Length: 125
Image 1 (cartoon, rainbow, N blue to C red):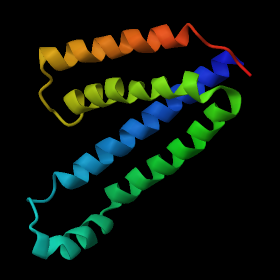
Image 2: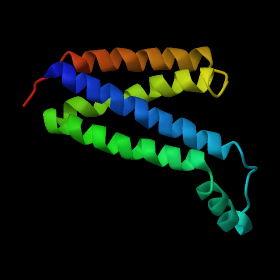
Image 3: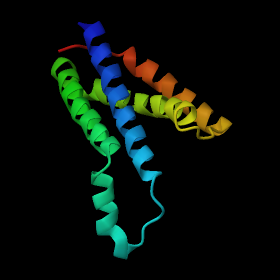
Image 4: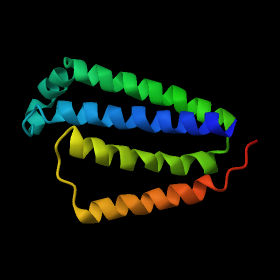
């Protein structure tokens, strides 16, 4: 049972991070928009396939996260949302080609240590 929980937790983190990458990809396609152009901006966002792919990933995240919560306590599961930081850091560097500073990398390693500590406390219900 515990393996199933971890699989769904990891799957939730992956699809959530992929949604963020999709939305960042869409956002990078536009210049900064003033308040007078917002309607046109939102229209253009909604016309992009990548936006809808991001929405699909959000929907999948809701589904997988609900499965997680069906099997374990929220106080155990919620800290694993921090996996998103780790996955987003990797996808930001390798997919979006963003620079990742040493401080950001060290901070992410600390988050990983926290996730491991929480993972050692599992009590299924």
